Image 1 (cartoon, rainbow, N blue to C red):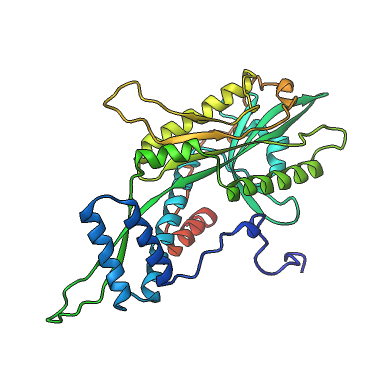
Image 2 (cartoon, one colour; image 1 turned 90 degrees about the vertical axis):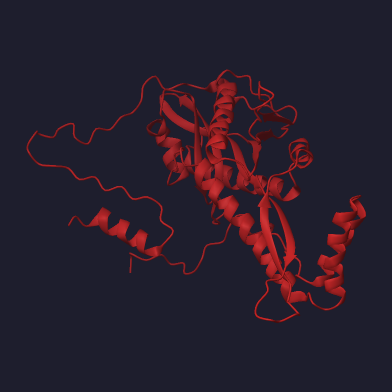
Amino acid sequence: RSFYDGAVGKKQSITRELDIDIPEPTVDILWTKVSELIAQTHDNETKARYSKILDNIDDGRIVDRDVEKLFEQVLSLTQKEGNDWHRILLSDLHHPKSLKSVIFAGDRLLDQPSSVLIVGELPVKGLGETGQIDLTVFIRRNIKGLVLWTPVMIIEVKSKTSIDFNLYAIQTGKEKELPPAFYSWKRTLTQEEWDMIVESNPDKRVLDQLKAYEKSLLIESRAIVPTDVRLPKKLWKGVIVLDSDQDYSDIFNAFQFLLNELATDIITQKYDASKSRTLALDSNKDEITAPRVALMILKEESRTTFIDEQSAATSLSIDNPFKERISDDRLLTHYVSIPSSTSFGNAAAWVSRNWHL
């Protein structure tokens, strides 16, 4: 009995109350949207294409079920883009099992001696609810000989995907009346759309998400550290935005550059959150387009004093499992599992890790 948890079922998410209410897919929503597009465009050919969609709605060829399928396509595309970008961008970061492991053993996660540590997908459960923060920034403090890694900033990654759609009908047999079907696809954001994203404040849902994670992270931190250790009352917050229709390797490198710039600003105590600002990349050559990824730093009224208490690690903590091994002729087989899109792949990886054949 002691092997099982008392709770049964899925744990509550920290941001469950922030889930977006998707409107009921109806032809009325599509009719209104297409009418707005007709009013905004000045190209007669484009207007004619939009008008054909309205004609199909008025003639009853497009019904609520067609709009529902279009919604499903768009949601599937955007969710896949978000998941793929999170997996790629955060792949080079440490993914700790718990907040406690970072606070007390953050030195083990360092790749080089530093007073700043950035981890990915940090699990938090401050109010008994669970969640994962995309990026959490810690600073190293030495408090009377006790090394503690203190959280000072949280960042969410948001991919921006623009979707185009149109009506198509495929000829099947000799039928003259062909039922229309919606198809949607991803496209690159226009320069105007990208400028609007980086120049605007994050939407309310993102801000509320950051506040919920901040509250949960601080509550859990206070329960972990000794009672006489000071912790921040508020955290710095940021949002990384990117155009999802870009080359993965280019954005990955730009993403790493932004994180390194952020860490350098904190280490050198040049980080300034007294006003909102956006860190973006510019190309020094006209023929080369700068990667569309930016770090939006949110304004915080009070400046934390913890940045002055940084204490950089002077060396790396390296565990050598073979330190006391006596040399012999035996071979070591190291099984490494990688993500798999199928359940069979996960099962095979588990067997390889846990049962040497």
